Image 1: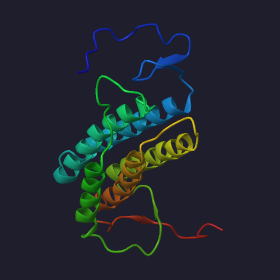
Image 2 (image 1 turned 45 degrees about the vertical axis):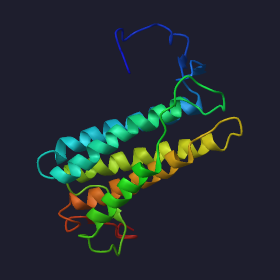
Image 3 (image 1 turned 45 degrees about the horizontal axis):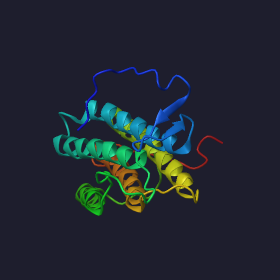
Length: 193
């Protein structure tokens, strides 16, 4: 159970932060960067939800589940799997979470016409916010992939699948809030030459 009595502890004043294991890492460490960027993506989804709460209730509920999952993903990244025995089972992203996002993508995508062009982020405030969340989610994914390349680090494979799927979801969601793609802003290659 999380208990936050005191918000400032001064333990990070030296530029380090504590992982779930208690180990200290620099705040610039790639693992800290990974879960920090997941947190940033979560905040972007929160901004998008300001625009989806009333007009897109089903989509908003899906985004709420993703926000909760992003805290799970942050906890997963914050507690590296070192192979050592712990007194508790660390929270990990599981396949059921990825499957749920895939099912939500399929449910939303069935009402959309196939794209014949790339789209520009925008069209509506909700779509712009969802595309921002998508790009920050992709950045978090890139950082997680870089972290996973370090032989001394471990990143949950399901966490990588999950974040990849969420960025796909956010793309589809951006189209949904643009009148099911009817008000998407299409890219016109070389238009301004």
